[in-house]
Every structure is written in structure tokens, then in C-alpha cells.
Length: 608
Image 1 (cartoon, rainbow, N blue to C red):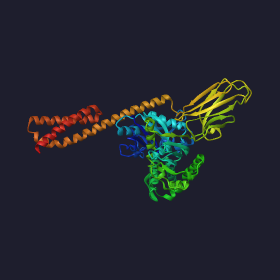
Image 2 (image 1 turned 90 degrees about the vertical axis):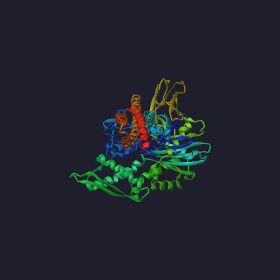
Image 3 (image 1 turned 45 degrees about the vertical axis):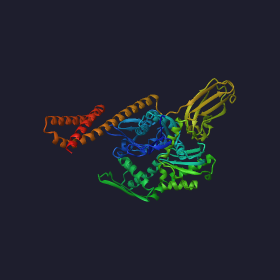
Image 4 (image 1 turned 180 degrees about the vertical axis):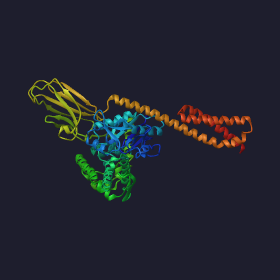
């Protein structure tokens, strides 16, 4: 059966899993790590680096190393979140042709889905190395509170990476699948997901019949570990500026070192009560003196610096419980997801709010990818009798007279769903009406997101309020929104399928997919050559070790000298091919090396 992988495309780290023999497992990368940093860098030589290798060189190549791209995906360039990122990131964020944020690395401008695709492509390769076969299908997770544009941009990233994303599912929902998989339980749970860049809370009902139902969900797509790091950075920067009158944020390398130090200090303070931030030679003064940054940060100070961020997550939890119509005692288990839930203060806040200790039975970094893999297997295997009932995270409706937003499908409605409402014309003899389809929680239409628009024409002429138009919203299981408008008297109708856009044209997408395919072919070829090179190096080292002993035995005869010369020629030819990049020719030469090695071993064996 075709394998479907599950990918947790995270802000800080990404993770890939697959179901094998009915058991979901996380796949380790080449370095043996089960998570891979969601970082991409371009070197001076133009080489692309992804994951741990990108992270290791981030300080010396800060301007050309991207992290936390997920916080920018599917957003408008002029949004508050993107403007905030511009002020804090060491890499350059520029405006794209469709009012979308783009990232400039080594003079080339990349779209955010393109950067995310590089991470997804790495996850695809990790899975293929493990499975020994090509992988084409994936289930990719997103924060529950992602809007239509952000989801579509993530799907586009998958397409660029050469993946058919058969389903986008919410991270807390994926976590609940992994939590309840194979347990045959009936429980109401809360999934508290505080990751590197986003926060989600979902209230779920799990039944022993294999039904996973989301009751309500809420979140903040710009609240996560990045913000905790930023509080530490700001604290360090302000203190240093007070003492030295220098703003470290103006130096990209210093900013990247601060970022790394803040993340390290935050992680350490989950297990110790104080840690030292020590950054020697952080910058030079105006008089060219080397300046150092050395500060002691305590767990108490960190909790003070980030108290409002933790409190914000608790407020969202409260709101979600209200939406679900449940009390705290109705929640039977609280599942913690995301690296930030390792912070003791976060765990205390969650325990205090839900009045119970959170469940420690799932791995916060791996559970989302495992859930995505479980969903992927269920979608292609009829034997899995698992039903997933998700909700729409945002209210859907239309703009009405006065610039107000009229709700048709409320937030947290179980999908698929269909809802209708009747509206009347507002002007005398009005023959057409424009329907603006919107998504959001504000009563004011201009504060919500416009998803699409269409015009219903050919209305009969009548006094204002006399023509009735029925507007119907439908959302299918994949979250695709369709809107129909119908004149109830004449039967005239018009409809639109809302296909959200990531800000990329079809041509741009095609070009990016071609580039990614070419990169994958080159990457695989490089890997094959590297493998052959290592094989050749091992054989050459063994032959070189045997040369003196073989020469001792055969040097006295013409035949022996000839054999030695031929062996040297085989080794030299292999060394040339190792540097040439000609993998097929090198593979042939490896056979010649292996024959030489066997011959040498035979000669030495006779002496012994």
C-alpha cells in the first residue's frame, strides 16, 4: 500500500512520521534526531542548507539564515505580525508583488511558501531514506487558528516540495489522534498546544467507537516560544544599551547570537533556577574596544518577563471552554503539546486553570506528526474505522449595508455544514447585488478577511426590501467554502467556490515546483556520489595499507611490478573520479578497487 507520511511543519522544529504495521513511528533524520530545526540558509557559494546544518552556521551567516517562516506564511506584508517580524529578524523581509512578505537571501527573493517547501522537501527525503521508496502523499498539520490563506499557503508549500497534501489537519486535532489511538476510550480532553510560534487550545470528545470530535477551538497564530525568546532578547538589549549606549539589534550577527543565547537560557531554566548568559566580544565600541555581555537570568525573572504571555494562553482557554459550553470539571484530561509546555510556569498555569495535573503520556515534540501519520493511514486504508469531525475556526458570513458583518456559519461549527439566510434589496429598482464573502470575528466587515466576491444580476425591479435573496454557505470535509445566492421569486442564482490564495500566481507556483524538482534530483545525485566516494575511500585506505606487504612479496618479478603499477593506476583513477562528480564511472571503478583489494588480501594471506 502507498505510504502517506505525516508532517508537523513547526515554527521551531519539524517532524515526520509514518504508520508501519499498524504502529505510528517518528522517523529520525540522518543525524539520528527525531526533530529537525525549521531553518533554511544559503551559503556564500549558493548552497542550500536545511535543518541542523543551517542552525549551526546561523551566527556567522545571520542575514542569510531563515527561522520562524511559519509566522509569516499566508499573511499580508502590511499586517502587524509581519511588521513586528521585520523589526526583530536578522534576515531581510521585503514586500512581494501581491502584498505578501518575501525573504531576501544572497540577493535572491523567495516567497514564504518556497522557504517552507524547502523544509517539507527535507522531511520528504528523510522519510524516503527510511522507507527506501519515493513518497508522494502527505498529511500536513497547521495551527487550528490558521485562516484560509495560511492553510492554502501551507498546501502550496507542499506542492512546491513535490508532495500531494491529501489533507491539512489542525495540530491539536492531530495530537488528540495520537493520544487516543488504539486506546478504546471515551473521554473529553483539552489539547493545550504552545509551540515555537503559535498557540492553540482545542476541546475534543474521543469515543471508543473511533470518533474524534472537536467541540471548540481557539488560538493565537502569533504567540509562542519566539515571543518568550524575544522578551529575553529585549531584556538583554535594554540593559546593554543602558550600560554602553549601543543597540545590539542594529548588528545582525549580534542579534543572531542573542537569539541563540535567549533560546538556550529559556530551555535551561526549565530544569535549573538560574543560568548565565555569556556572550564575549558581542560588539565593538566606537573606540574599537571589544565589549562583552554577561548576565545572570533566574527562572523567577523569566516568569516575570513572560507573565502576560502565559496569562494570554489562559484567557484563550477560558474563552474556548465557554464556547464549548463546558465547565473545567467536564475536562477529563489535559494534553500538553509543543516545546514551550516544558516551561514549569506554563505547566503550573495549565494545572491551576483546569484544576488537574496535565497528562504526561505524550511526547510534546512528536505527538502532532504521529497524529498526522495516523490520519494519513486512515485516509488510504479502508480498514481504519476512524472518524474525524473538525470545526471551522473562524466565523463565515457576508458584508451587509452599513459595512457590517452578517454571520452565516458561526465559529466552531462542525464541518461539513450548510447554512442559509434570507436578505432583501436595499435600493429601489435594484437589479444586481454584490456578495462579499468574509471570515473573522469582528462585527465590522472591514476588520475581517475578504475571501471572495461575486455579483448576482438580473433581479426584478421592485421597491427597496421587496426582492428576497437567499444566501447559502457550504463547507465540505476538506474545508472548501462554497457560497450560493438565489433570487427566491425568479430562481436566478449565482455561486462562487472560495479558493483561497497564498499570494502566488499559477506561473510562480509552477516555476517553484520545477526548481524544487531540479534541486531534489541534484541533491539525490550528490548523495549517491558522496556514498560512492565514501565506499571508494574505504577501499583505497585498505589497499594503501596492504601495498608495502604486497610489494615485499611480488617486487622481484616483472609480473609483480606490473601488477603493482596497475593497482596504483586503479587507485589514481578512482581518486580522480571522486573529485569529478561522475558517479556511474566511479561505481565502475569501485568494482576495480574491490578486485584489487581481494587480490592484495590473497597475496598477503599466502605470506601469513
